[in-house]
Amino acid sequence: MKVLLLLMFLVQSNLVLANAEVVEFSDESLRPRYQQLVEELRCPKCQNQNLADSNSPISKDLRVQVQQLLEEGLTDQQIKDYLKARYSEFILYRPEVNQATWLLWAAPVLFLIMGLLIIYRLYFRFKADSSSGSSNSSDSSTIEAASALNKDEQTRLDKLLADRK
Image 1 (cartoon, helix red, strand yellow):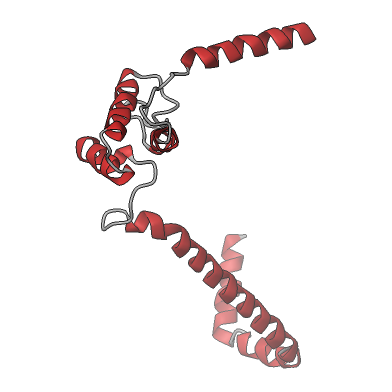
Image 2 (cartoon, one colour):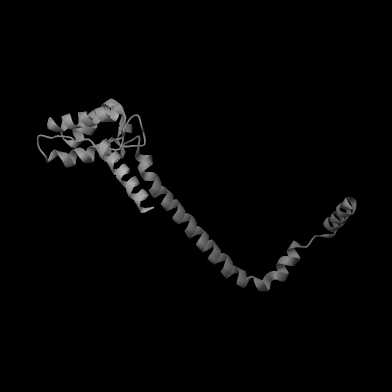
C-alpha cells in the first residue's frame, strides 16, 4: 500500500514538473511580477483558470506575451490595460470597480445590510408581540366577544354546515 502511494506521488510530481515552464528573464526581479500577473489574468479559452494553471495554447502565448511586455519595461497596470483592450475586462479575475461592475462589488454589502435589517425587524416584532401578549391576556374575553358571530351569521353558518352533511 505504501509503495503504491509512493509510486502515485512520484508520477504526479513528475507530471507537475513536466507541465512547469522555465521562464528566463534578463532581470530576476521581474519573476515575482510575472508570477503575480499570470495568476491574476484569466485564460480566455478555459474561463475558470488563470494563465498560470492553464495549458491551452492561447494561455501559453499570453504567458510569453506577458514576459515580453515585462522585459519591455511596462508596468503591471499597463500590461493589464493592454490585455484588457484585446480581450475585454473578462481577462481580469478581479474586475475593476467602474460603472459596469459597481453592483458586483456592492452586492455583498447590500445583502448584508438587508439581512441585518430583516433580523432587526423580526427581533423587535417578536419582542413587541411577546410583551403585548402578556398584557392582553386579561382582555381575552373582550376579543372573544368581538369575534362572536351575530344571529344571522350563525344561522347562515349552521345552514351551510347542514347542507354539507
